[in-house]
Picture 1 (spheres, one colour):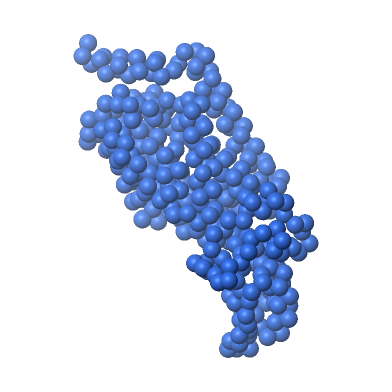
Picture 2 (cartoon, rainbow, N blue to C red):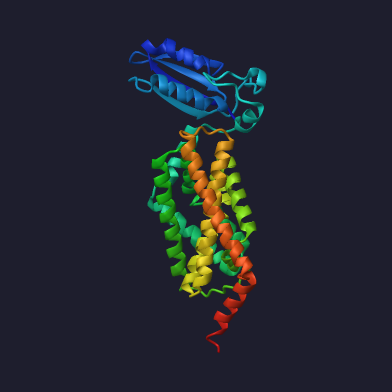
Length: 353
């Protein structure tokens, strides 16, 4: 992970305090004069120290007129900044991180950077709705024809990535406003995808027994494991600044195809398969959020309230347990994939009889 350059501007009267704060969080910085009676500090900071530096700067100077801070990534630094226990900088009023904490959080970008990456993607814009519709249509056509590569193309577009990550991040740090906006954006996007593929179903011939399509109507423990892995891997890559396309493959695999399949099923009159596909979508959404919260916490994101974050995670866990109970009940009563296939074949052959 490259270092960060943090530019800090403070009034002349706050220079001494700024130097004291900066000295606790970085080893290299320089100072220069800027207009209007202010001073600028340019600091080279290791990624794991950016968050605590910004937090202390905001606490010390956030209410002072003329204060500002910007953060940018650096591709290379010479001589390099060493990342060893011996060179670790002690945190203010905090015990030094354990080796395990340092290992898992050393490459994570700061919470502010994650916020900035997610903020733009949880707004309902025409471009977002258009992307959702196109992704769902591509996924639907790919599943209908059994073309896995086309379905992957829909995953790479990843329109639901931002809202899903926004929900997990908001639950982790206890941001109600972000949680509301992310949930609303995800709900609108999911509805747009469902409506688009429902309309598409009237224009094309759909064979519900095509494996790529039919598999989206089956919910099994393997799907739960897949969604949990998607959520954890997605957050892990996202918090390290990975490209949205890479993270999109990890997340969209669990969200976009089930919605698209549900739209096609409903348009053809296969309500049971349609509701099963929506159930798969709901299960995957719960798993992705639960795994996302766990991974954010695992990487050291600081919750505003452990009680709030723990409560939200507990709710997701309870919902997942209920979904697993439904799956177990279906298996116990023999309502599995074999029974669904027989129902579909009966529905297809009914008009011929």
